[in-house]
Image (spheres, rainbow, N blue to C red):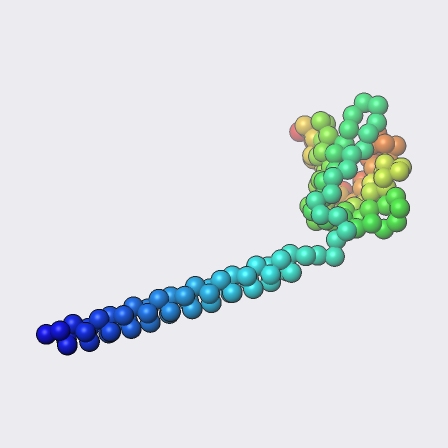
Length: 149
């Protein structure tokens, strides 16, 4: 009888060790894959943008126009190309477009991509716009549709 218990102890010890060893290998393998996946994800998220989530403002005597985008690239000392979901927002209106060249020193902005202007009673779809005179004047370019409510 002791002989069978002795064999069973060795078998149980060997089986337990094998299970623990397999579990450790599985955990280490998964950990290694997770680290590689994180590195690949970080490398894919990196872009060639100089600024991530840029925020600017056009200030004048009566109001502020806040500008946000997903990416920005410096063109020169004063000009910044804002890309992806560019939004101009003030208390009076919102303009949405994809690409804008913003001049920080002159506080002007120009876009030649499809744009949407929204205010309380007016909506304008255009092929671009130019904001100048510190945000007091806006010119819409190209084929434009105006909806007045």
